[in-house]
Image 1: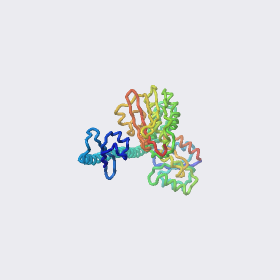
Image 2 (image 1 turned 45 degrees about the horizontal axis):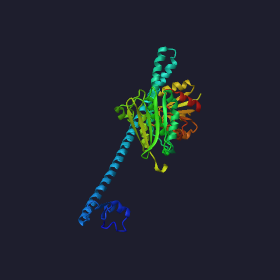
Image 3 (image 1 turned 135 degrees about the vertical axis):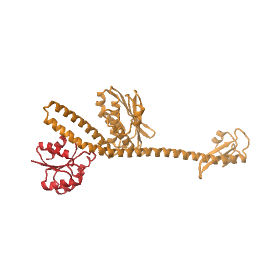
Length: 319
Length: 115
C-alpha cells in the first residue's frame, strides 16, 4: 500500500502520473489474490480536497481484498465457461464420430449382405437378356431388372465408401490451390447447367497441414450440392479468408435454399432430399472437417440460397 | 483349357460364375470355403483362383496365405462385396482385387490379363 500526501513535491513520483490525477494526495492499494498482484486501485482526493484518512485507507484495503476475490472468481468463471464450451464441442465430435462408426459398420454389413444376392440377380438377368435377346417382352423386362440392379449397386457402392475407414495423409498445402484444382474439375459441369463461378480467394491465407484427397472430397461434395440446388442456373461464389485464427472457406449458391427442418438434419448420415441421393456426402464432409480440428456451418434462406462455411484452424507453426 | 478355382460360399453366385466363366472357355472347379479351397488346390493345381473373403470355416485371406505358401505362382483375384480392403490386397500377395458386381466384365478382363 502507498499513501502519498505530497505528490506535487515528491521527486520520486512520476510527473505524468501526478499531472494525470491532478491531486496532491493519493493512495494505491494492491489487488492481491493468492499472493499474486492482479491489479491496483488508486484513489485520490481530487474532488474532496480533504486529507485522506487512515480510516478511508483501511476501508479501501478491505474493498480491494473483496474486489480482488471477485475479479479472480470472474476470471475463473470465464475460463470455466470456455473449458465447458470446449468439452461440449469435443463431446459432440466424439458422439458424432462414434455414431458414424456404428452406422458405418452396420451399413457395411447390410451393404455386403445385399450386394451378394444382387450380384446373382443382376448376373442371371444378364444371362437371360443374352439368351432371350430376340424375345421382345423378355428383353424389355430383363433390361428393367438390370437397370434397377445397377442403381442399387451404385447406392451400395456409395454406402460402402461411407463406411470405409479413412486413411489420413496430411501434407502442407495452400488451400487456395486445392480449391483451384477442385474448381478446374467442376468447371465443365458448372458451365453445362449453366452456373457462373465467382472465385474470391484471399491470397494471404497461410498454408495448412491437411489431407488433400479428403478435403478435396469435401469441396467436391459442397460444390456439387450447391450446383444441384440451382438446376436452372445461378451463381456459385467460393471465398477464402482468415477469421479468428481460422481459415474460412465459404461456398455460396443462389439456389433453392433449405427449410429449417432440412437444416436440422443436414449432417445426419443417410438423410437426403435428393431423389437419387444416399445422404452420406455431408456426414462424411463433417467427419473429415472434424478430423482436421475444424468445423462446418451452414446458413440458408429459402428461395435465396445457401452458404456452407468450413473453418480450419491455422496451425501456428505453419503460419 | 485353363482351370479356374472359384472359392465362394454363396450357392447362386457359384452357379453364376460357373455358367459365365465356362462360356469364356475355362474349366471351372468350385470350393465353398477356405478349407475346401486348400483341398481343391492340392487335387487340381488351378491356373487361377477367384477368392471370396468372408466365408465359413476359413476365410479367403487365411486360405490364400496357406495356398500361396506352397503354390507361389498361382495368380489370385480377390473377389468380395467389400470395397474397404482394396488398398490391402497387394500386401496379401493377391494379384488383383475386383469388387463383386452383377456385371462380370471387370472380373473377366482381369482373368484374361492374368492367364
